Image (tube, rainbow, N blue to C red; front, side, top):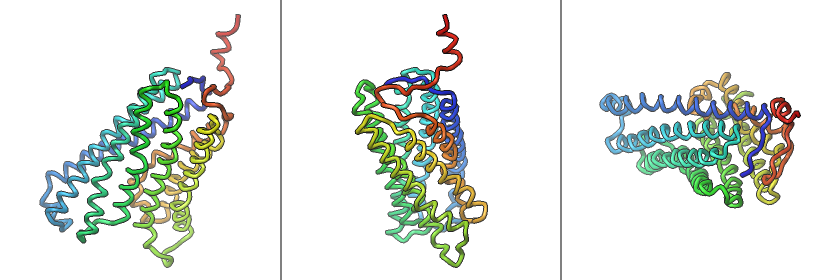
Length: 312
Protein backbone atom coordinates (compact mmCIF):
# COMPACT_ATOMS: atom_id res chain seq x y z
CA UNK A 1 0.00 0.00 0.00
CA UNK A 2 1.49 3.33 -1.05
CA UNK A 3 2.33 5.84 1.64
CA UNK A 4 1.41 9.47 1.07
CA UNK A 5 2.26 12.84 2.53
CA UNK A 6 -0.96 13.90 4.22
CA UNK A 7 -2.06 17.51 4.54
CA UNK A 8 -2.08 18.79 8.12
CA UNK A 9 -5.85 19.20 8.29
CA UNK A 10 -6.30 15.51 7.46
CA UNK A 11 -3.71 14.47 10.06
CA UNK A 12 -5.54 16.45 12.75
CA UNK A 13 -8.90 15.03 11.68
CA UNK A 14 -7.63 11.46 11.83
CA UNK A 15 -6.16 12.02 15.30
CA UNK A 16 -9.40 13.54 16.59
CA UNK A 17 -11.46 10.55 15.39
CA UNK A 18 -8.94 8.01 16.72
CA UNK A 19 -8.80 9.75 20.12
CA UNK A 20 -12.61 9.90 20.30
CA UNK A 21 -12.81 6.16 19.70
CA UNK A 22 -10.13 5.52 22.33
CA UNK A 23 -11.88 7.68 24.95
CA UNK A 24 -15.21 5.97 24.22
CA UNK A 25 -13.61 2.52 24.59
CA UNK A 26 -12.01 3.48 27.91
CA UNK A 27 -15.41 4.66 29.19
CA UNK A 28 -17.16 1.39 28.35
CA UNK A 29 -14.35 -0.82 29.67
CA UNK A 30 -14.49 1.03 33.00
CA UNK A 31 -18.30 0.99 33.11
CA UNK A 32 -18.41 -2.77 32.47
CA UNK A 33 -16.20 -3.44 35.52
CA UNK A 34 -18.70 -1.82 37.91
CA UNK A 35 -21.68 -3.47 36.19
CA UNK A 36 -20.14 -6.97 36.31
CA UNK A 37 -19.15 -6.49 39.96
CA UNK A 38 -22.72 -5.62 40.95
CA UNK A 39 -24.15 -8.42 38.82
CA UNK A 40 -21.82 -11.01 40.35
CA UNK A 41 -21.70 -10.05 44.02
CA UNK A 42 -25.26 -8.81 44.50
CA UNK A 43 -27.05 -11.85 43.10
CA UNK A 44 -29.93 -11.94 45.59
CA UNK A 45 -30.75 -8.25 45.19
CA UNK A 46 -30.55 -8.52 41.42
CA UNK A 47 -32.90 -11.51 41.26
CA UNK A 48 -35.41 -9.88 43.61
CA UNK A 49 -35.45 -6.58 41.74
CA UNK A 50 -35.82 -8.15 38.30
CA UNK A 51 -38.03 -11.05 39.44
CA UNK A 52 -36.44 -13.54 37.07
CA UNK A 53 -35.66 -17.24 37.25
CA UNK A 54 -32.30 -18.96 37.58
CA UNK A 55 -32.14 -19.94 33.89
CA UNK A 56 -32.65 -16.39 32.70
CA UNK A 57 -30.13 -15.15 35.25
CA UNK A 58 -27.60 -17.61 33.79
CA UNK A 59 -28.40 -16.31 30.30
CA UNK A 60 -27.90 -12.73 31.52
CA UNK A 61 -24.55 -13.66 33.07
CA UNK A 62 -23.51 -15.28 29.77
CA UNK A 63 -24.57 -12.13 27.95
CA UNK A 64 -22.95 -9.63 30.30
CA UNK A 65 -19.68 -11.47 30.82
CA UNK A 66 -19.37 -11.83 27.06
CA UNK A 67 -20.08 -8.13 26.58
CA UNK A 68 -17.60 -7.15 29.30
CA UNK A 69 -14.81 -9.19 27.71
CA UNK A 70 -15.80 -7.62 24.40
CA UNK A 71 -15.41 -4.09 25.77
CA UNK A 72 -11.87 -4.82 26.94
CA UNK A 73 -10.99 -6.38 23.58
CA UNK A 74 -12.49 -3.32 21.89
CA UNK A 75 -10.27 -1.15 24.12
CA UNK A 76 -7.23 -3.07 22.88
CA UNK A 77 -8.52 -2.50 19.34
CA UNK A 78 -8.92 1.23 20.05
CA UNK A 79 -5.35 1.48 21.36
CA UNK A 80 -4.09 -0.29 18.25
CA UNK A 81 -6.23 2.00 16.09
CA UNK A 82 -4.66 5.06 17.70
CA UNK A 83 -1.19 3.58 17.14
CA UNK A 84 -2.15 2.81 13.55
CA UNK A 85 -3.25 6.41 13.02
CA UNK A 86 0.00 7.84 14.39
CA UNK A 87 2.10 5.45 12.27
CA UNK A 88 0.03 6.24 9.16
CA UNK A 89 0.56 9.96 9.71
CA UNK A 90 4.29 9.33 10.07
CA UNK A 91 4.34 7.31 6.83
CA UNK A 92 5.46 4.22 8.73
CA UNK A 93 4.47 0.98 6.98
CA UNK A 94 3.91 -0.70 10.34
CA UNK A 95 0.46 0.93 10.38
CA UNK A 96 -0.86 -2.00 8.32
CA UNK A 97 0.15 -4.45 11.04
CA UNK A 98 -1.62 -2.36 13.71
CA UNK A 99 -4.68 -1.99 11.51
CA UNK A 100 -4.95 -5.73 10.95
CA UNK A 101 -4.71 -6.44 14.67
CA UNK A 102 -7.22 -3.71 15.52
CA UNK A 103 -9.72 -5.16 13.06
CA UNK A 104 -9.28 -8.60 14.63
CA UNK A 105 -10.05 -7.34 18.15
CA UNK A 106 -13.04 -5.33 16.92
CA UNK A 107 -14.33 -8.40 15.04
CA UNK A 108 -14.20 -10.44 18.25
CA UNK A 109 -16.03 -7.62 20.05
CA UNK A 110 -18.92 -7.84 17.58
CA UNK A 111 -18.79 -11.64 17.74
CA UNK A 112 -19.37 -11.40 21.50
CA UNK A 113 -22.71 -9.69 20.80
CA UNK A 114 -24.10 -13.12 19.92
CA UNK A 115 -24.65 -14.15 23.59
CA UNK A 116 -26.89 -11.09 23.92
CA UNK A 117 -28.75 -12.16 20.79
CA UNK A 118 -29.20 -15.68 22.18
CA UNK A 119 -30.55 -14.30 25.48
CA UNK A 120 -33.16 -12.11 23.81
CA UNK A 121 -34.27 -14.53 21.09
CA UNK A 122 -34.39 -17.47 23.49
CA UNK A 123 -36.18 -15.27 26.01
CA UNK A 124 -38.87 -14.35 23.50
CA UNK A 125 -39.41 -18.06 22.76
CA UNK A 126 -39.63 -18.86 26.48
CA UNK A 127 -41.71 -15.78 27.39
CA UNK A 128 -39.07 -14.26 29.65
CA UNK A 129 -39.28 -10.66 30.82
CA UNK A 130 -36.87 -7.87 29.81
CA UNK A 131 -36.25 -9.38 26.38
CA UNK A 132 -37.18 -8.22 22.89
CA UNK A 133 -37.00 -9.81 19.45
CA UNK A 134 -35.74 -6.57 17.85
CA UNK A 135 -32.79 -6.42 20.25
CA UNK A 136 -31.94 -10.07 19.60
CA UNK A 137 -32.08 -9.64 15.83
CA UNK A 138 -30.08 -6.41 16.02
CA UNK A 139 -27.15 -8.06 17.81
CA UNK A 140 -27.23 -11.07 15.48
CA UNK A 141 -27.32 -9.02 12.27
CA UNK A 142 -24.53 -6.72 13.45
CA UNK A 143 -22.32 -9.75 14.04
CA UNK A 144 -23.21 -11.29 10.67
CA UNK A 145 -22.57 -8.07 8.76
CA UNK A 146 -19.37 -6.92 10.45
CA UNK A 147 -17.43 -9.93 11.78
CA UNK A 148 -16.71 -11.84 8.51
CA UNK A 149 -15.34 -8.88 6.47
CA UNK A 150 -13.31 -7.61 9.46
CA UNK A 151 -11.70 -11.02 9.96
CA UNK A 152 -11.00 -11.46 6.25
CA UNK A 153 -9.51 -7.96 5.95
CA UNK A 154 -7.41 -8.54 9.08
CA UNK A 155 -6.13 -11.78 7.61
CA UNK A 156 -5.25 -10.22 4.25
CA UNK A 157 -3.41 -7.32 5.88
CA UNK A 158 -0.82 -9.85 7.07
CA UNK A 159 0.32 -9.93 3.42
CA UNK A 160 0.39 -6.21 2.48
CA UNK A 161 1.82 -7.00 -0.95
CA UNK A 162 -1.53 -8.57 -1.93
CA UNK A 163 -3.12 -5.25 -2.89
CA UNK A 164 -6.02 -6.71 -4.86
CA UNK A 165 -7.29 -8.89 -2.03
CA UNK A 166 -6.90 -6.12 0.55
CA UNK A 167 -8.78 -3.69 -1.67
CA UNK A 168 -11.54 -6.23 -2.21
CA UNK A 169 -12.17 -6.68 1.50
CA UNK A 170 -11.93 -2.96 2.21
CA UNK A 171 -14.72 -2.38 -0.29
CA UNK A 172 -16.79 -5.12 1.37
CA UNK A 173 -16.07 -4.16 4.99
CA UNK A 174 -16.79 -0.42 4.72
CA UNK A 175 -20.46 -0.62 3.57
CA UNK A 176 -21.04 -3.66 5.79
CA UNK A 177 -20.04 -1.65 8.87
CA UNK A 178 -22.32 1.26 7.96
CA UNK A 179 -25.25 -1.05 7.26
CA UNK A 180 -24.54 -2.93 10.49
CA UNK A 181 -24.94 0.28 12.46
CA UNK A 182 -28.04 1.17 10.45
CA UNK A 183 -29.59 -2.13 11.55
CA UNK A 184 -28.64 -1.39 15.16
CA UNK A 185 -30.29 2.02 15.32
CA UNK A 186 -33.25 1.13 13.12
CA UNK A 187 -34.11 -1.73 15.47
CA UNK A 188 -33.53 0.50 18.50
CA UNK A 189 -36.14 2.86 17.06
CA UNK A 190 -38.55 0.02 16.26
CA UNK A 191 -38.15 -1.41 19.77
CA UNK A 192 -38.13 1.74 21.89
CA UNK A 193 -39.19 4.89 20.07
CA UNK A 194 -41.82 3.88 17.50
CA UNK A 195 -44.20 2.44 20.18
CA UNK A 196 -44.67 6.00 21.43
CA UNK A 197 -47.20 6.35 18.61
CA UNK A 198 -48.50 9.39 16.71
CA UNK A 199 -50.27 10.82 19.77
CA UNK A 200 -46.93 11.60 21.39
CA UNK A 201 -45.28 12.65 18.14
CA UNK A 202 -43.59 16.04 17.94
CA UNK A 203 -41.30 17.75 15.49
CA UNK A 204 -38.26 16.48 17.40
CA UNK A 205 -39.50 12.88 17.55
CA UNK A 206 -40.36 12.99 13.83
CA UNK A 207 -36.85 14.18 13.05
CA UNK A 208 -35.55 11.36 15.26
CA UNK A 209 -37.64 8.80 13.39
CA UNK A 210 -36.46 9.97 9.97
CA UNK A 211 -32.88 10.03 11.27
CA UNK A 212 -33.12 6.45 12.60
CA UNK A 213 -34.63 5.10 9.38
CA UNK A 214 -32.75 6.98 6.68
CA UNK A 215 -29.51 8.74 7.65
CA UNK A 216 -27.33 5.67 8.09
CA UNK A 217 -29.08 3.89 5.22
CA UNK A 218 -28.22 6.73 2.83
CA UNK A 219 -24.67 6.78 4.24
CA UNK A 220 -24.45 3.03 3.56
CA UNK A 221 -25.65 3.44 -0.03
CA UNK A 222 -23.15 6.24 -0.70
CA UNK A 223 -20.38 4.17 0.91
CA UNK A 224 -21.31 1.24 -1.35
CA UNK A 225 -21.16 3.44 -4.46
CA UNK A 226 -17.79 4.88 -3.41
CA UNK A 227 -16.42 1.39 -2.71
CA UNK A 228 -17.69 0.04 -6.02
CA UNK A 229 -15.85 2.82 -7.84
CA UNK A 230 -12.77 2.19 -5.72
CA UNK A 231 -12.71 -1.50 -6.60
CA UNK A 232 -13.48 -1.11 -10.30
CA UNK A 233 -11.44 1.98 -11.13
CA UNK A 234 -8.82 1.77 -8.34
CA UNK A 235 -9.78 5.35 -7.60
CA UNK A 236 -11.11 6.81 -4.36
CA UNK A 237 -13.81 9.42 -4.83
CA UNK A 238 -13.01 11.57 -1.81
CA UNK A 239 -16.20 13.58 -2.23
CA UNK A 240 -18.39 10.51 -1.86
CA UNK A 241 -16.24 9.27 1.02
CA UNK A 242 -16.49 12.66 2.72
CA UNK A 243 -20.27 12.83 2.31
CA UNK A 244 -20.65 9.29 3.69
CA UNK A 245 -18.54 10.16 6.75
CA UNK A 246 -20.50 13.36 7.34
CA UNK A 247 -23.82 11.51 7.12
CA UNK A 248 -22.56 8.72 9.35
CA UNK A 249 -21.51 11.12 12.09
CA UNK A 250 -24.52 13.40 11.59
CA UNK A 251 -26.81 10.55 12.63
CA UNK A 252 -25.35 10.73 16.14
CA UNK A 253 -25.33 14.52 16.25
CA UNK A 254 -29.02 14.57 15.29
CA UNK A 255 -29.75 11.90 17.90
CA UNK A 256 -28.03 14.02 20.56
CA UNK A 257 -30.06 17.08 19.57
CA UNK A 258 -33.34 15.16 19.54
CA UNK A 259 -32.57 13.81 23.03
CA UNK A 260 -32.73 17.38 24.36
CA UNK A 261 -36.47 17.54 23.64
CA UNK A 262 -37.50 13.86 23.72
CA UNK A 263 -36.76 12.31 27.15
CA UNK A 264 -36.86 8.68 25.97
CA UNK A 265 -34.03 9.44 23.52
CA UNK A 266 -31.88 10.90 26.31
CA UNK A 267 -32.41 7.78 28.45
CA UNK A 268 -30.71 5.68 25.75
CA UNK A 269 -28.05 8.26 24.89
CA UNK A 270 -25.27 6.50 26.82
CA UNK A 271 -25.88 3.33 24.76
CA UNK A 272 -25.19 5.08 21.46
CA UNK A 273 -21.81 5.20 19.72
CA UNK A 274 -21.45 8.88 20.57
CA UNK A 275 -17.75 8.95 19.65
CA UNK A 276 -18.86 8.96 16.02
CA UNK A 277 -19.98 12.58 16.34
CA UNK A 278 -16.34 13.30 15.42
CA UNK A 279 -16.67 11.65 11.97
CA UNK A 280 -17.97 14.79 10.17
CA UNK A 281 -14.63 16.46 10.96
CA UNK A 282 -12.88 13.74 8.98
CA UNK A 283 -15.57 13.92 6.30
CA UNK A 284 -15.03 17.65 5.80
CA UNK A 285 -11.28 17.04 5.55
CA UNK A 286 -11.91 14.37 2.90
CA UNK A 287 -14.03 16.81 0.87
CA UNK A 288 -11.04 19.13 0.63
CA UNK A 289 -8.94 16.44 -1.06
CA UNK A 290 -9.02 15.56 -4.74
CA UNK A 291 -10.00 12.05 -5.87
CA UNK A 292 -6.93 9.87 -6.34
CA UNK A 293 -5.88 6.45 -7.61
CA UNK A 294 -5.06 3.98 -4.86
CA UNK A 295 -1.94 2.89 -6.77
CA UNK A 296 -0.68 6.48 -6.88
CA UNK A 297 -0.62 8.85 -3.92
CA UNK A 298 -2.73 12.01 -4.15
CA UNK A 299 -0.96 15.23 -4.91
CA UNK A 300 -0.78 17.55 -1.93
CA UNK A 301 0.99 20.80 -1.34
CA UNK A 302 4.41 20.22 0.30
CA UNK A 303 4.71 21.45 3.85
CA UNK A 304 6.94 24.45 4.73
CA UNK A 305 9.41 22.06 6.33
CA UNK A 306 9.65 20.05 3.10
CA UNK A 307 10.04 23.25 1.08
CA UNK A 308 12.96 24.29 3.28
CA UNK A 309 14.57 20.86 2.82
CA UNK A 310 14.41 21.12 -0.97
CA UNK A 311 16.02 24.56 -1.11
CA UNK A 312 19.67 24.56 -2.30
